[in-house]
Length: 287
Image 1 (spheres, rainbow, N blue to C red):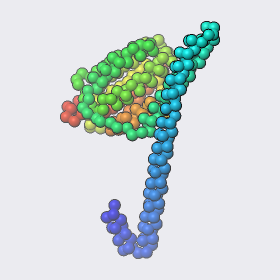
Image 2 (image 1 turned 90 degrees about the vertical axis):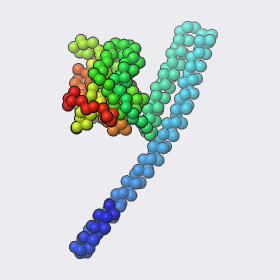
Image 3 (image 1 turned 60 degrees about the vertical axis):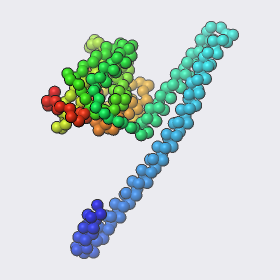
Image 4 (image 1 turned 45 degrees about the vertical axis):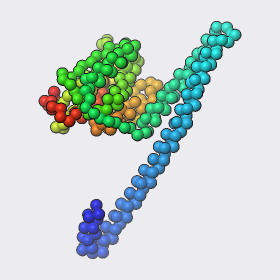
């Protein structure tokens, strides 16, 4: 940059005073823009530190509130009161406990989204990740009335992925999927399904490994597809709206991406696209 500045200044001198004035004005304007960006960056960093600290300050009392709600619930059982009154007080204590847990979860999501996100990509078989997630999540899918199915790639699907973060990204999508399927039945009588599909393919000449999370829920309207990965935009009632934003951050840190194809009334296909591990044979285009 310095070399180009010197060459530009010498060229301006050769062209005369007007060119020097023009170049000087441009350099001053550029310096001012850089200074404004620096100030804005510092302000955002300070704001991030303040909000992170505030979230921590709120999180600790919430834990205390949740604990006391449990103690109140236990104490109510020993009250000398009629059963209906005890049941009413227990219900209130349970509501308080649930709300404290919900707010604590929202704060944890916020702290994760606002904080540094560290990933350690290693050669990871996404087939194995899908199998582990399937075993772990099958009861929750069944509770929502959905059948969980694994469609593995025909060979080990080695991606450059942090196993813990890859599972977190997929779980965020799976939780969204079962929640929307719990709230909506397929209009054509199809059974509810949650599918984890792994495939190897080539994109822009580079091998990638893709983990799909497919559901038979209500789908996402086309006008909302560009919004759902933004913070605090939720696909479901009661959602905090940070799960998809965190998932998008996880994929960006992997130098991968998240994609979605959705058909209203038919379901959604969310894809987590990871770089293939170095040394993995390139699959045929489209395979």
